[in-house]
Length: 86
Image (cartoon, rainbow, N blue to C red; front, side):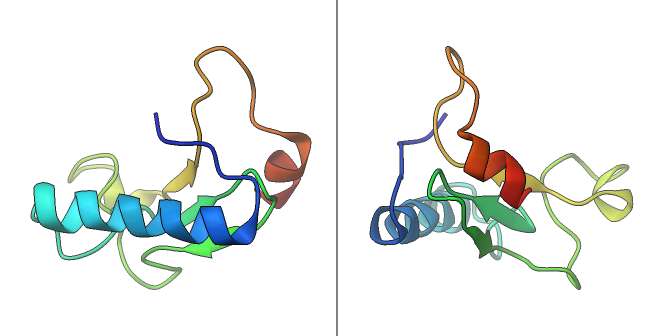
């Protein structure tokens, strides 16, 4: 679970945090997700449409699209604007 982001500036920082974790800690070449969705209702590009994600393992990555909702949803659902963005 990540930090809340409810405006473009905080969501851009959160995307950078995710990228830093995936690249510097996990030693991946980039963000594992194809797209990340902020609580601000905007979609942020990770690997995009044309690159296989690294989010679900070697069997499913080529067959799927990785979308991450940024925030912590253990006790609540993503905001409606984030769901609509997806």
